[in-house]
Amino acid sequence: MQGWVHNRFNLEEDKIIEKAYSFPCPSCGGKLGYSAEKQKIACSYCGYAEDYSRANDELIENPLEEAVLAAPKQVVEEIGKKVFNCSGCGSKFMVESDKVKVSCGFCGSDNVNVEAFDHQYIKPAGIIPFQISKAKATSQFETWIKRGWFHPSKLKRLAVMEDLHGIYIPFWTYDAMTDSNWQGQAGYHYYETQRVRVNGQWQQQQVQKTRWKSKSGSLRHFFDDILVVASHGLDQNDINRIFPYKLDQVVNFDPKLMLGWEGEIYDVEVDEGYQRADKIMDRRLYDLCSVQLGGDTQRGLHVQSKKYLKTFKHIILPLWISSYRYQNKIYHFTINGQTGQIGGKKPISPYKVAIAILAFILIILGVVLLAEFLKNR
Ligand SMILES: [Zn+2]
Ligand SMILES: [Zn+2]
Image (cartoon, rainbow, N blue to C red; front, side):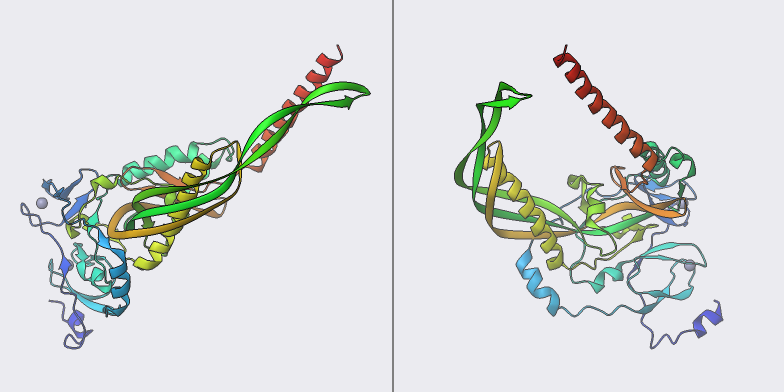
């Protein structure tokens, strides 16, 4: 069919996507997709729906060092244009070979380009399917935009939401065992009574002093599933706002669950991702050692940590991404596709902040005046 389509390529020279995945409805032959609303693989024409497998036996921890050494040696296929041969209608057209979602413009069928994952050395082991539908994500946004006191009153009326995109995002999870040694000084407050002269009169006053004590100790801690986003397009701090993901619900990776959804392949390598996880662990270890050091205050806490038995997994997690426009500015936000947790930036009303500061000053002033009044009575 459509001879002009064929003439645009030389199929002998062009590479063809061979591992495109689509799934016709067994009941009517229409296109199947994954429905977040039903949490099933469902047909949009006839109402056919089927459950997905909850098996997670392929989710195994992989030794990190081996992968870091092997990854650069692996020759991955170069990203470029490839011919996509639609199994739904037979049309042929060109797509970027790293594009996960391939929709046929002729018959409307959605396909998952499983080959996109072949460009990378490490393949996804697990996935959490979308559990928040587009309608639910929209209502999450509407509730969120109304919340908070310091934002402009007209924000909820005037914020115009752009289209929501449901995207499966690549993540790394890291485990590590750690041994830490720490040294530092814990300060303990005590009070001394001193005689001071106030308004020409001698008074007794309590003055706070600190006694310092040098301490040291050690700590063993195991980190399980430190989650790092494996896409350079997303900021880890933005993603942290929509944590946690319930990782006990990760199932074996199955391209079926991506049917009809956008997807990304990772571009943060496994060792680069680990560098981020390493910083997260160091911060956490510092806090844990600080708890051991104790005291009312602390100074000079040094922590040396050794990390070993490092492992990783590559998983795919659901995320809604969008932005909204308010007074010609764009604000981005993201929604956890599993829990509905939303995170993003909102404009601050300078007017409301000024009122709050003014109110605060008035309260302080009132307290000071009252104290003066009671003293001079
Ligand atoms: Zn059907
Ligand atoms: Zn087609």
